[in-house]
Image (cartoon, one colour):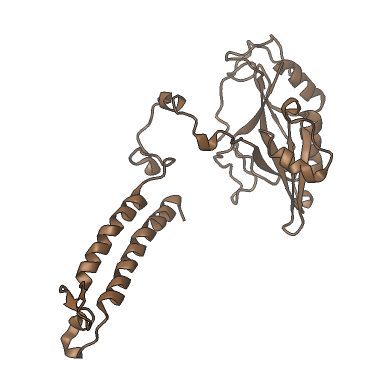
Length: 311
């Protein structure tokens, strides 16, 4: 089901609950009073009139209680109709709204205050499925220079996860030696990659078994390329050109060398499963520093424009 359908179902729950409470109150307070069948519908409820019980107490009618219950249900109904803040307020957004013409005013987002409840939150991980854990660990630790921080083994579910990243040891200290402490340490490291190995994938046919999201036909039922949503992960380095020379010497595959394409001074390489890694200069603003010739012998004057790799 779509998100919209599920939200509609959830929004109906408070109203149904309120109505059920109203009917229950009518049933137990005014009494389900059976009388002769010839009385028809009036055999079910003392409708529209209050009455006095056997002890002389005034009893509200079912209609009165129903009315009160409906009034009490209004706040619940109003709450259920409120849209979560992450849902678009633009009319028709789900079915294709008018074009923004490539522009969106984000000034209000810059001005948003830091919420007290989220100030200690961390963007901690991105999970990617890999075919062969050994070749992936070789790439991320030896080529990209990340550290293996912790490993989670789940044989009962048939998968293992490997967390790699660049832990800020100057702030967190070194990675613990004790395996029992490594996971807690990892959860404090920003920007980790969770490499997930589903047991048995290493024996499947083909060099790649997972779709990377970038105009990729892997895993599609008809063999056609799909318009992917996922794009890439990114790392920053002091010198893009020097880092790319290192990547080339270690046999990395380039999607874009620093001087190719429309944006100069950045690069894209592929990991063993085909996921893209963007290589950016550390602490530099655009336009980025460049060199006349890069590691792939592409010069700055070579033609080339931006390409949308999602399709």
